[in-house]
Image 1 (tube, rainbow, N blue to C red):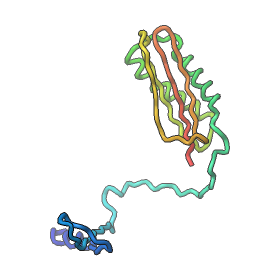
Image 2: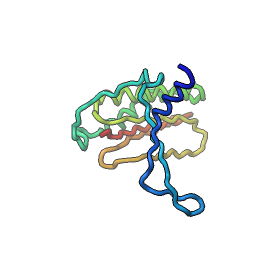
Image 3: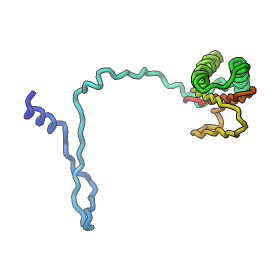
Image 4: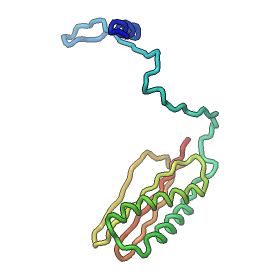
Amino acid sequence: MSDKEKQQRKEKRVVKVPSNGRGKDTTGRTKDSISTVSYIDELGHHDDNARLAPTMENTYQMGPYKRFPAKAATDILKDVLTSYLQEEKYEVEWSQKMTKTLCEVIRARMKELMIPRYKIVILVHIGQLTGQSMQISSRCLWDASNDTFASYSFKNSSLFGVATVYAVYFE
């Protein structure tokens, strides 16, 4: 395709439409403004592999049928942290790998609860106990009537572990 043909196709795609409102220039006078509207009538090469979203019927469900069991989640966190960290000594490389492992184990245990329509976010922190203090905080957009969380802290002689599970209702 030649450059001239490409330019003609581009001009066909761009349509100039005068706007109803009047704009002001920097001198304070009003003048007519022109808006540019463009559209693409062909798929680009980057759109070939686009995933199609599945179409689902509306459920008109405004709240959960089954609430997220925070007590059961806390029990899972306690069980996992205690069983994995009980006899361990703190090491930097080990703790980086262990946080990922603990997140995967906790996620699998949470999925066994089969609570529908909740997004699960899991955070695990492992640190060395050397007499320091640490504060962990988080912020998010929250619906107090449907969203909840569970948290558990574990300590042994050389390390601490904090695991938090956020259950956010997905409407």
